[in-house]
Length: 256
Image 1 (cartoon, helix red, strand yellow):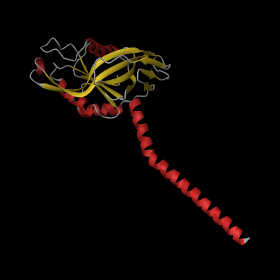
Image 2 (cartoon, helix red, strand yellow; image 1 turned 45 degrees about the vertical axis):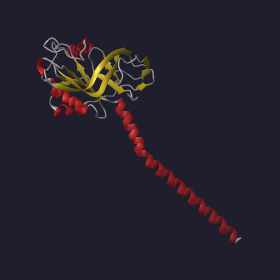
Image 3 (cartoon, helix red, strand yellow; image 1 turned 120 degrees about the vertical axis):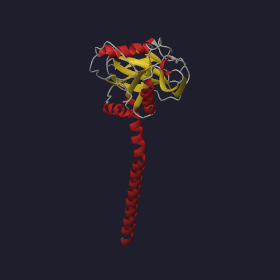
Image 4 (spheres, one colour; image 1 turned 45 degrees about the horizontal axis):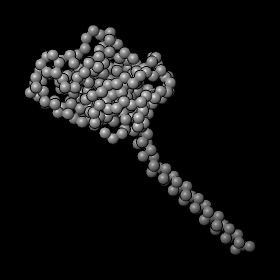
């Protein structure tokens, strides 16, 4: 009987040890996985809560290169979507900007009208469609980015469409914009105007701005139009209409 009891105790002890070792192994596996999970969560959060920094500038404006250099410096930072919009109202002063379109000029005017202003200027930076500054002071720019907050709807990408998730818009109907920009640093020789003879470094230059439709708080899906050029990255903005604040932004994570 004593022998039988000893065997049962031994088996019970071994079973307890096996259970303990399995529990320890499971805990270690979870702890080892947590940094990767947190990194994935943080990366997903950064993609869904980007701070949008829009520079309005012209290749013909001698005051713009310092602001553009500041935008170039933050263009690769996580959590920031830096965009360079070339405007047209310098084109008649000796050099026609090679990337400027009327749509980008109109976007800057929409911001001005929203703020009841009767003029626009370069360089000018808007952060999340709210705060604006000249952009030549990098410390001031970084402080403004640090204060910015974005807490809009989810933005989900598929191969041929984009879906804006359901949420409650605080100010009414919002526009959904598709932005395609060149993530490379472009070195552009300037043949005239105030910057004549210089070669300007430009990064995240916007090449397409497409109005996909509107969002009223319900989940909505839009087809993605074909890109006009190869090598561009694609972003989406959910923004209150007529130059209002940007509620959310996301960059498509497919290779370019």
